Length: 126
Image (cartoon, rainbow, N blue to C red):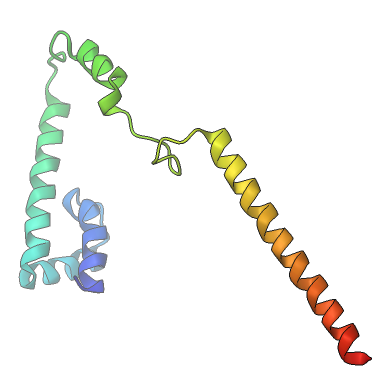
């Protein structure tokens, strides 16, 4: 996908709800005439916008039990996703301990290297 397509896709929500300024609107329209992939995304976003608008205009209450169903699904373990960095499911304390051990090992290796270089310079000067 080209950079132009990326730009047009970023502008599509504003294009669909007609809040895009006239110049950009014209540019997006010109691109949509030529690009089938962007046309497909435009059609998808237009139908989504129409559906949301229709939902907004209805005064019907949500179906009975919807809230309970959503809360039950939210409590189930399959619906939960781990926090960033905890994909493996590791405990934060273990992650912190491993990070600290890695830092200590790196610092130790750096110190050993510095001491070796210092001793080597002393030997060379003699």
